[in-house]
Image (tube, rainbow, N blue to C red; front, side):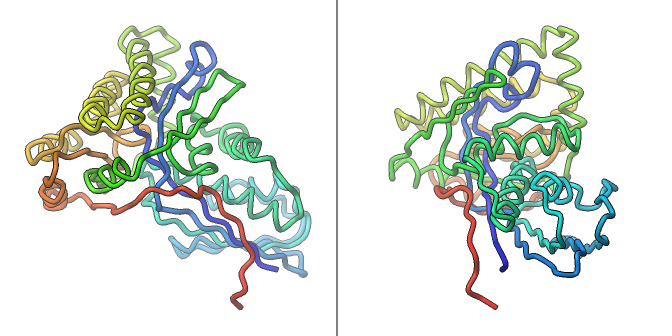
Length: 337
């Protein structure tokens, strides 16, 4: 039997960073995000010879381990190994991973991979997970097993799909879908421009820097996190009221707070791309994920999105086309052979 799974990436519209401890434990995080049709795909099948064979289709990488090797963490597909260990597979297995998302894009691809891995391997081994528990398990794989710091919003978006209003007061979390009317959905899909700067970033390094600044009580960082939380609450209202002008203003406000978290969140290249986009009609924008590289998201004035996209492309950025995903995690067994 071969089992397949896919999980979507996400755009964090507001409040990202507030879901990261210790702020999410001491104050409580609020995030608004939306899943998009850029996916991580997993396939898994049992092997009778006891070997573990792992493939990365994106990088042409294959690693193989004999039964009883312990699947050492060595920087090669460690998240896949962690998921195999977590699910408790003791027999042979072959796993292939592929993603539609560029490396280090800030779109939650590693979380999508973790969610899809646990669901796929769980189905293969006959192990069932309650939905929200699956998101939490995927988060623990990264933060506790692999010691990569980060929040929980990405796993919830990949699991649930749609537009989400998420609150975190660790260890508790709540998740609510924000319905988007057909008009608002179409307008956002038309007017949002997502670009990849071409520079991946190691989010864990930036997160560690921001956490350190928060723990040391740096006023600029503390105030920025509180500001991000307030923007997320306002973003929920703007989406419910279908107020696209306010959504653009809130994206801009979110970016201002992001920039004050730590100097590493922005850089001259990012600032140059923002200036180009705004000069062609972008009303508001932000870096996705931790910042420092990866992707930038802009909401454009009517019928200027093509000019914004062209200016960004000519400046060396890659435009990532997308629409919104409402399905979230999907797991299936294929009839193809």
